[in-house]
Amino acid sequence: MTGIRKLAQLQRGSQRRKHMRITDLPQDNESIIEQTARVLYDAFKEHSPTWTTMEAAIEEVRESFAEHRISRVAIDDEGSVLGWIGGQPIYDGHVWELHPLAIAPRAQGRGIGRKLVEDLEAQVAARGGVTLWLGSDDEGDRTSLGGVDLYPNPLAHLANIKNLRSHPYEFYQKLGFVIVGVLPDANGAGKPDIFLAKRVRQK
Image 1 (cartoon, rainbow, N blue to C red):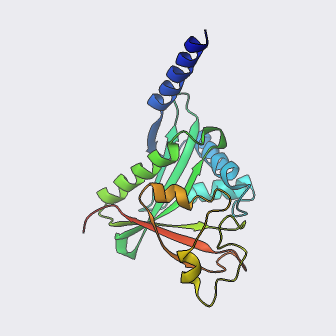
Image 2 (image 1 turned 60 degrees about the vertical axis):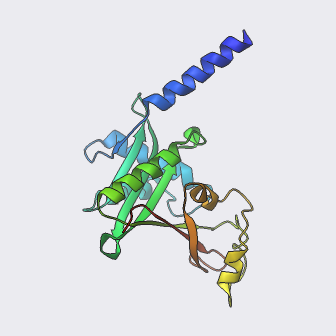
Image 3 (image 1 turned 135 degrees about the vertical axis):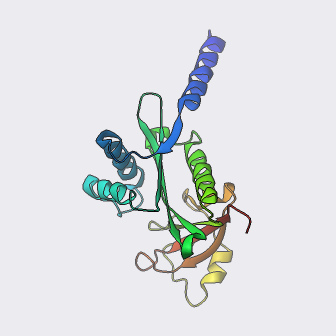
């Protein structure tokens, strides 16, 4: 019986992965917009004060509909939003900023973030972008860079960075991103922004 239950669980997990699809975030579907905002709010409320209300999260979602931006969602076969990723061009479109990436807490650990990032890479490359860039804030002392004065030599601290409490920079490293810099005190004293980038298309 135990083996049968395990097989059934594996089959259900396979079905969940099989039926997830990634698509453009629809501008005319208020239910999907609200769900996406909820995913953003729930994913960041424990680690970042950026989106402190659902209203702020909805505003962020609507801003992603601006011209030339990319806004993609992962949706399951029941129409529930599992994750959201966005991109916007800088440096005349040679570089795209990944912002944001949010996965519903209930769906984390299932590879959805990886698939969304890979999808964004393909979208950026198709638009002629060369590099995908992002800033990954440390506002809660989750790395060895948080809560300390990085001056006068931020790069020395950066060279010895350690992940203390599940900071997402290592997630991006597993996807081929490399750390390219740090901005000390970006979010206040001792709260740096860690910069990562990846080439997605040959020049």
